[in-house]
Image (cartoon, rainbow, N blue to C red; front, side, top):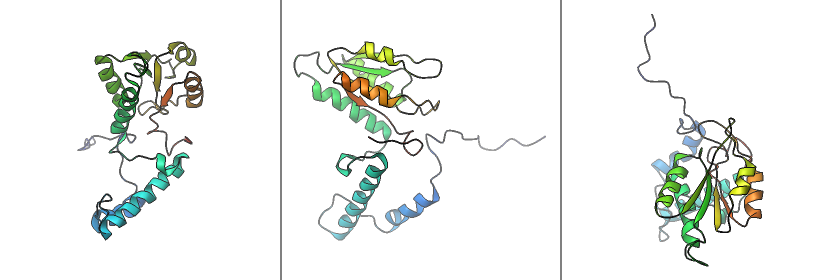
Length: 199
């Protein structure tokens, strides 16, 4: 009889995974030697750190087809989801009447960070339409089309699902969303590096 492993087998490498040794080696100097604050502009340590951050910004922009000025670093996807969704609602609140900016369309299978943010917004009066998914985990483009209202300003949907691997038809979702004059918030965290992403 074989002995049970002392630790459980970890399978969720989309959530957290061992660091690629190449990434570790590239970051080692910044952990051990170059420890300046990139916002400190009055000394060499700060200048070196700022230069490294700007180089990283250019690399990320190149990866997703963006301009470096469009890249904003956060602590992670959860913070980005919160900032993006709440930021859009906050931007449109009160403009052109109290209903403008008060409707978001999202999907029941979104990441918990998006679901929790939308549930919070719902609790403070933002109207949320929760689209269902089919047996393959895909949202219906027809249901999406029907969910729009004049006060809809945002559609929030992920590109690749972190639990099921389902890839949403993001190009078609973007086309529908933009045709209705709304913004698209796409958590593409699980897609980048696995499928082509070009913003």
